[in-house]
Length: 414
Image (cartoon, rainbow, N blue to C red):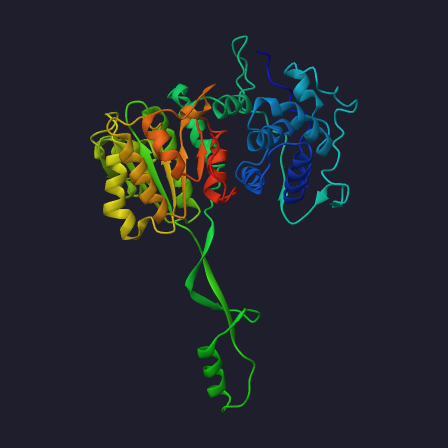
C-alpha cells in the first residue's frame, strides 16, 4: 500500500450545514443511497472532530456516505465537484477513473457559489469550522509499506467484519460508533401541549382564560398532541456463533442513551438476561468494562442457543406488560435455533403484535448466496418488518435506517 495523500493547505472557514446539505444532495443525484440520517451523521462528525485538512474532510464524508466499495468512484467525483482541490486523493490510491488534480494546489473553491464571505474572502454562515495547519497523526516516519494515518485506519475498521476485528481495533470502532445517530419514530401521547394553531380546542385553558377576564369573550385556546420518541428494545444473541458480533452490537446502547432514547437491552443464549442496569451503571467506566460486567451477569454467554425460549420469556415477563408495546424491537441473531424452530415463529408473531416494528439483524445475511434457510430464521422472517446484515460498521447505517422506519410498511427482502 502507498502512503496517504498529502494534507495540503489548511481549510478556510466554511458553512458546515450548507456544505453538508449540498454534498448530500449532489450524492443523491449521482445515485448514492444518501439519507437525511447520514447527512446528520456527517455534520455531527464535523462538530465532534473538526477536520484539520482537506483529506480529513474527505475521510469524514466518505465514512458517512459510502457504504460499498463500488460507490467510492462516484463519491470522489461528486466530492471534488463540491469541494475542489481533492483530485489527488483518488490518484494517490491508484484510482484510474479519477480526474487529475487541479493545477493550483492551494486554490480551494467555495463549498457553495452563494456563500457569503467574511473579510479576507472566507465563506461564513451560522455553523462554522475553523481549522489550523497542524501535522496529521501518523506523519512520523515508519516502516515501509505501512499507512499510519487516522483516515486509513478508520476506513479499514469501518468495512471490516466485526468477527475479524482485532482487540486493538475496538478502540477505533468506539470512536466510529460516536458517529451513529439513532432515532426512533415519533408517536402521539395522550398529553397535549398549548398551541395557538393547534387542531383542537382546549376547553380547560379556554375556561380559565374566560374566568380571568370576567366571562368576557376571549380567543379560544387550542392544543396539539405531544410527541415522543418510541422506546427501543435490543435483544442480542450472545451464543458461541454470535459472540464476536455481540460485543460490537452492545456498543449501540450508549448511542441510544446519548440522544435520550428510552432503551432496554437484553442478551440471550440458553436463557434471557436483562443488561440495562449493568450497562447503564458501568457506562462511565467505558464500554469494555461494561461488557466485562455483562459477561459476568449473563452466565450463558458463548453457550448454546434457545431463541424461542428467550423470546417467550421476554414476551411473558416484559413484552406484554408494556415494554414492547409500541416499541422498536431489534433482534441481533443468526437464527440458529437449538430446539424447535416453530417456537421461534410463534413467539416472533406474538412480539410483532405487541411492537411497532421488529427489526432482525443477521450478520450471515452478508455472505454471498445467503438464503434464510436456518430453522429459526426461516420461522421468524415472516414476522419481521426489516431484515438487515449489520456485519460491519458501514452496514450499521442500514440498522439505523431500519430503526428510524425509513421503509415503513415494507416487508424485508430475502
